[in-house]
Image (cartoon, rainbow, N blue to C red):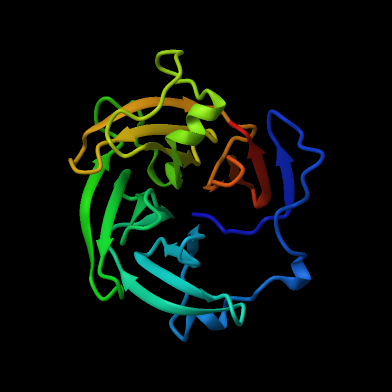
Length: 247
């Protein structure tokens, strides 16, 4: 369980002195409370921004996915979907930004799940799933302190920075057909777990490795595809910190 509140910024590996904070001032931020409608928001635990269609995807860990549409002319959001899905989703991401689909990390079942949907979100269906407690993954069941955040990183970014497989010690890009890898943030030890999945076959994946962050707990991930920077949210005893890494 987590609360998405960012208080301080922590930089990993490389201090990027020349880069300004990539957001507006807090006083200029948009309050999305009214955009979410009258239904109760319960533990809003994961977010994903799609810059292609200007949509903000969010999940509640009680099994609700919400989608907000940004009107670039008025700079305002409206909710276009609020739908129940299965399990206990803690994080949400997309691989193909142009496709009517999204992926979640399910903390209850320790699964990556692929959902497809109609263009207006009237129908959302669980299409495929990958059990991270199954071989070849060494992840163990730690109850409610397991996987929390998920993000997809395309091969082009991984290749440009020379990403190394922890399992082989060699450079690695995807071989299972999705064109990138899934990074999973875990509460247990703050570890980032990495998987290469076959998007069209249940439980078919390569375990790429696990990577230590600078904190003992990690609860959400976000990738800026324009810069290749990975943002890792930590919430240790309510002391929220944001770690930024160039991988």
